[in-house]
Amino acid sequence: MSNKTYTRRNFLKVLGLAGATAATPAIVSCAGGDKPATAATGTDQEPPIGKMTYRTNPKTGDRVSLLGYGMMRLPTLDAGGGSAREEHDAEIDQEMVNRQVDYAIEHGVNYFDTSPAYCRGRSEHATGIALARHKREEFFIATKLSNFSPDTWSHEAGVEMFRNSLRELQVDYVDYLLLHAIGGGDDAMDEFNQRYIDNGILDYLIQQRDAGIIKNLGFSYHGDVAIFDHALKMHDSGKVKWDFVQIELNYLDWRFADEVNDSNTDAEYLYGELVRRDIPAVVMEPLLGGRLASLPEPLAAKLLARDPGHSVASWAFRYAGSFPNVLTVLSGMTYMEHLKENLNTYSPLLSLTDEEMKFLEGVAAEYVSYNIIPCTACQYCMPCPYGIDIPAVFGHYNKCLSEGCVPRSKEQADYQRARRAFLVGYDRSVPRLRQADHCIGCGHCEPHCPQRIRIPREMERISRYVDALKAGNAEGLVDPHLRTED
Image 1 (cartoon, rainbow, N blue to C red):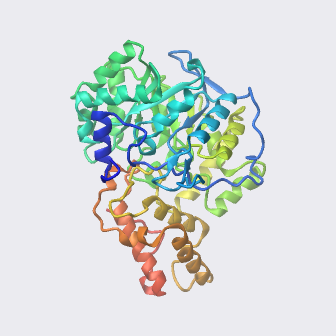
Image 2 (cartoon, one colour):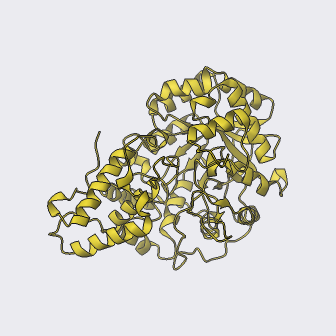
């Protein structure tokens, strides 16, 4: 297998038809982003034991920790045994995963969310190893039917994918099973039907729930709101009763999802529709891929001035947890520092007041004016056939935009400082051969982006902007605040 080049489709074909092993090639990196600072944020404070906030599943009575452990960005090792969490081909650090899972369970976390598609197909395997060392009644496992590729849309492939998840996780039943990321693609309704309806897979999963092999059945939603509404109409008609639904909810997406990304749906609507049906919500992207932990400096200053003892990120986690119909809030905690800070936030949760909610809505309104590219660093677009590090390119651009290091013209007073900061930082953050100018616009990445970013167009825009900065050509500068339109 090491002598082949595997695309996302190839991987999912292998996964669906033949099962995955710990050596499955990459489709999603476990890179976890920047290590968080601990100074003046409370992340160096040891979290208390026995103080976790719990929510009750109304169907099963499960007492679920409000903090859920997202197993999408796991710690990894380089070939020499050192930390290399940002290397796409790095091995998962199983010892560290075990330690962090042990620590999480000790401090009250009992919900662990994974997928056959996470960490290059290795997340379920690593999660299974870590959790198998604990009593089964100590934790709830959530995984997904991640049949993104048409090669996995047959009934047989879907059944094998589910059975393989049980084997990898070393369990006889799954507590929470999701149809993964419904609503994506150019023809979302047709894809939804082909993935789950026409092949009888949804009927099969319902049968597994009736048999007790799946305890709760739900779906995660990205993209076309018509699919979200359609799935809930299925619930209303009795075709399938959803036990829970996973949505993107944070203080930016609450009312500005379509302004940040015109393919998203405001969380206010999504959450409201679930509340009307008494369907618990599981929250993903409480930090919007880390962007709400690294706000533009003026906005971060507002949060820190209001609450100097806590981090910028803690505001976002408190926001997501303050909604009473939220069962758990998922966080991809690559580092022990991430875990400790989030444990402190939810042990116990201090819900936001109405006034604090309004304060955050004001911060969100200001954030929208920055026109930051809505990349969450989920790595679904990777690997690029031509080696572009797409999340790193977007990450550097967004960081500089937030910090005021993306100059518009030579007339700016700090033009030279900003120009140097952008160009030097770009070369340090992204290797030359993996930068935006090497994108050929093949479009391989675009269908896989849950945020539906027009990746080739944004790459072209950033490449032209960098060329203009290097040439020192004020006339050639592309206004960084003007996003690429269709």
